[in-house]
Structure formats: structure tokens, C-alpha cells
Image (cartoon, rainbow, N blue to C red; front, top):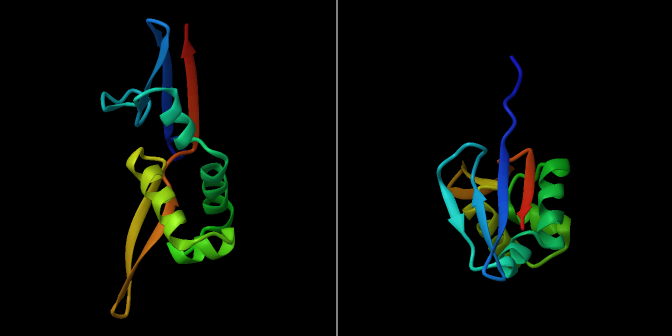
Length: 119
């Protein structure tokens, strides 16, 4: 059986001379997020977040700490970026217990991101 592709649809709409952005969690989903504008989209789709998504895809780190080590970035900064990516459905943070410790494993929740600009 073929694996279903998970896609995020981002639509940018010109309304009265400003761009408004909607992010649809999955194609065809009625659950939308309303951004405060194009600047929020820039924060969401920054180069660092693209690096995080690529690293999760290629290295499949076992924890947020492992991801931060691979990226050579501060743990707290990586954790904040992951929380934003998780909030908008790009990444899932899976809780795993190892002994008495609990860790969060970052896993990609999407296969593609489509951006549409309506003028």
C-alpha cells in the first residue's frame, strides 16, 4: 500500500494592500492558522528551520539534544524552533521514556510544503 503524502498548504492573499497568510495543516483540512502577516511566515520558514527539517529527515536524531549537537546550536534555541515547527504541524515531538528519563524525539510530520500567492 502506498504511503499517503502529508502536505501543508500556505496561502498568501493580498487584502487591501497587505499580505495575509493562512496555513492549512493538511491539504483539504478545515483547520487553518491565521498569521499576522508575511513576517510571521518568514519566521516560520527561515533558513535555520529549513536546516532543522533537513537534519531531522537525513539524520533522524533520537532527541532534541542530539539534534542540537548535530546542528552545533544551543539546545534552548533548537527547542524553541522545534516548538514553533510543531505548533504549525511540520514536526511531531514524540515522547520516549528511557529508564527514568523522558526525551522528545523530533519526527517530520510533512512530506511537502506548498506556498500559493493570490494577488
